Amino acid sequence: MRTTGTTGTNTLLWSASVPVVTLAGTLLGLYTWMWIGIVCTLAAAAAAAIVAGGVWHRAGAAVVATGTTMALGLFGASTLHEGCLKRFGERVDAVVVDTGQHTNAKGTELDICRVVDTSGAVQDLGNTENCYGQFKPKQHVVLYKDPLGGMASWVEATDDRGLEPISLWATGGLSVLTPAALGYAGTRRLSDAESDAKRVRRSRRNRAGARTSTSPR
Image (cartoon, rainbow, N blue to C red; front, side, top):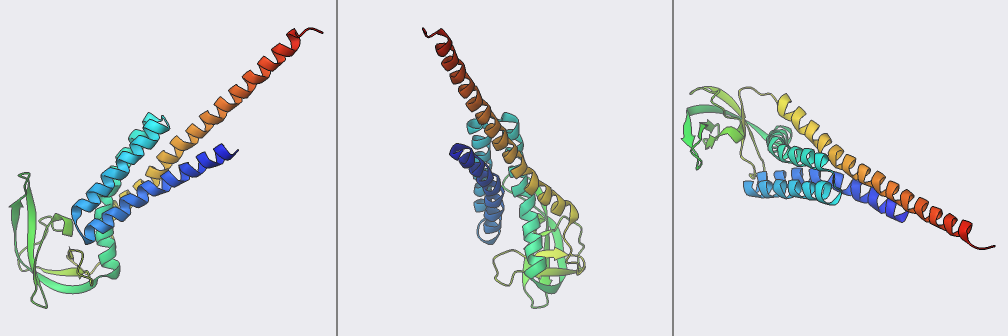
């Protein structure tokens, strides 16, 4: 019974820790350095693959858990960025002074918006700050700025503090699917362990019965 209890506890711990580490690392990366969030996501995905696939021997669940962990880091970054700033950030009026594109290190062209707020501060915002080429020069926009100055500002066309539904639903669904896949793998592992234990006990009883029936009287 102690083994079963320990196994069940380990399943719960892994099911909870993988998505929590992913989201916590993503949030830390938003405040500090983007690569911290990427490393945490990759580490959590690797842990999910090793535990579910290598330790618990559930290849299908390992593939699902790994994929959902990676996707959770991707969608979670946008959702956390938008959610934190719209919930706790400072609302500031601003104007788009210029738009354009820039090429990143991989050669991909990305949209960029240059905005100036009422304080005179100028910021260049990109895809991660909600600039996808939807704004025009001289357009009035709303900035949500981090009071602590850690996160880049989030730009919206209107004063709308609601979250983008696709990203929100994706993050919520992945936050459920990831621990569900790990929980399934751990539960099946637990069932297999119990089945093996029953077979061992049955085999021992059979051997004991055979010895008793063949012993001289």
